[in-house]
Length: 349
Image 1 (cartoon, rainbow, N blue to C red):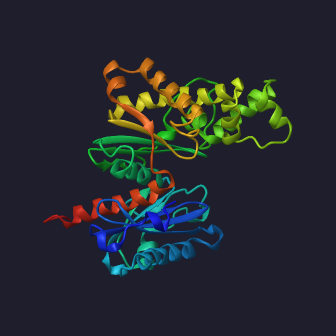
Image 2: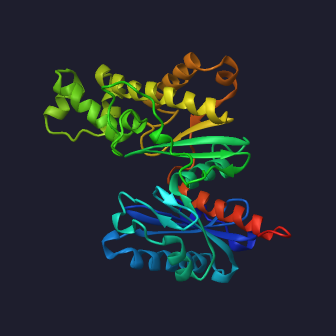
Image 3: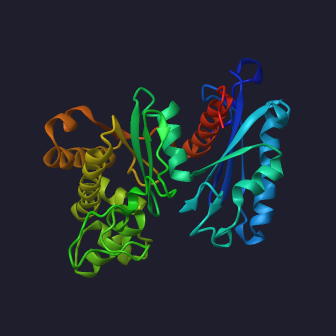
């Protein structure tokens, strides 16, 4: 997360200013961002979902005022607020249809509640769409005209930007990349959504742990098996650590995730033909600078090369995302900026 040393002073900011709010099941993250994506201030606090949506939205609104105060600017200098939340959503209505880790938010008018709480207009987006736009705007895809972000964590999220515009879809379900079908076989693994064969069933942290348990239960040996038998919690971090130490079972588990990601990425490339595909979230195995992360992304690139057209394989960049946990609030602010620009044009509805 950005520290005060990373903030720019308001006197050097490029107005107008935008606040980005990233609502998660554990934490609320709020940043104040200028017109070129620089952060003036940042604030985070526990979501406390058990307090209920009214309280959470009240505190999100207050947090927008908090970042204004930290930056030394008046709240009314903020042109617009962007709000990213888990989905699926009804973006036009401003509601979360089914929030998963925010169950009390199902059907709740979160956009309008936050707008009332902060006294500012709010643009609403899926959290992965916001992260994808953040990476497009000032992150790993900033030199490109289009990009796809896959966020690898408990689930698999997606954010797609085409010609500078986030893809939302006719029914607010655009870029649900984790639910793309990659395995139509009768014995396909089941996604947490209940459907078989989805990308999330093969490439999430949950899927990796499930697959590892199955492999170990089938009698796999090696250092991963030994440390788990000794009581260590089976996590992607543990699997990555043992892979880096030379355990072939752990490395094979990670490369199996990479193979399925490659299959899913090919479908995305053939559908939207982006300039770049980015991999973000908590499960990137140390990134390009780590031996396991490098093996992971090289396996993805090899899978893509074997399954797509040579021109696409050559010209589509596949790389790790850069913004980490900042992508959500930066992208939410960026989406607010897009809406502000649209509404500022003469004759805009």
